[in-house]
Amino acid sequence: MAGRYPLERIVCLTEETVETLYLLGEQDRIVGVSGYAVRPPQVRREKPRVSAFTSADIPKILALDPDLVFTFSDLQAEIVMNLIREGVTVHAFNQRDIAGILAMIRTVGALVGAADKAERLAKNYEARLRDIAASVRGAPRPKVYFEEWDDPMISGIGWVSELICIAGGDDVFPDKAGAKAAKDRIVSPEDVVAAAPDVILASWCGKKVVPDKIRTRPGWSAIPAVSNNRIFEIKSPLILQPGPAALTDGLDAIIAALHGASQAKGDAAT
Image (cartoon, rainbow, N blue to C red):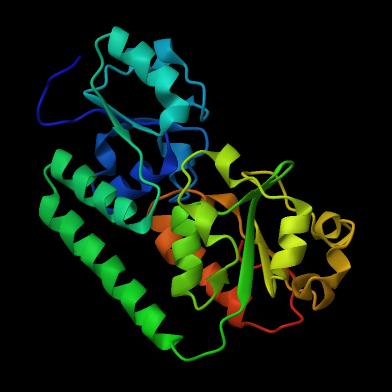
């Protein structure tokens, strides 16, 4: 089971490594994925699902006889522990910013013998990010509140805050973005009112965003984003997966929200 090379049987327990392997043309190595993997669309019909996010079907994973399992963050620590006890080789990623996303892409490529392809992919993303940042330089910078969860209210994680900046906005809670734990990014309704964001972006970790719930929070009618109807949902697979999706469609969704029609509302991306 463990220690074979080359790595021909890989299980990915979060989406970003799945998408990365597909982009590298190495998808045939994938033998199992997270139930949340939706990019590219064919993954749902091509690969068996073996986990949620904080839980996994360990016997099903073992039956796939993996050479390697990719996991992400401390939230999967118990899964990692159980797999290691069964003799499975695990690589746990923990990227929380754009630099970490690019490092993940390069590492995945190196592990499957596709380092050159991964390097080209990462450099293309780096160039794209530089070009977008340059294109909005000098334009008005709206203040942005990103809401990752609604109860309690949790502000955006590191890579989201960085993408907001690249897109030409200013995160109203940049001091919280570096916190790895969601509990350390909790904000109060009063905090948001005081920050007076021009735009509110919301992505409630897979739960549908209800803009009316945001608009009707006590005292929030005074927030420019609310009074000007600039509340946008960005779908979780686009922005809350620290991988290629965030650097492409997720960033594009932020740009559309920040620089599109000021009276638009609803989904910034689908």
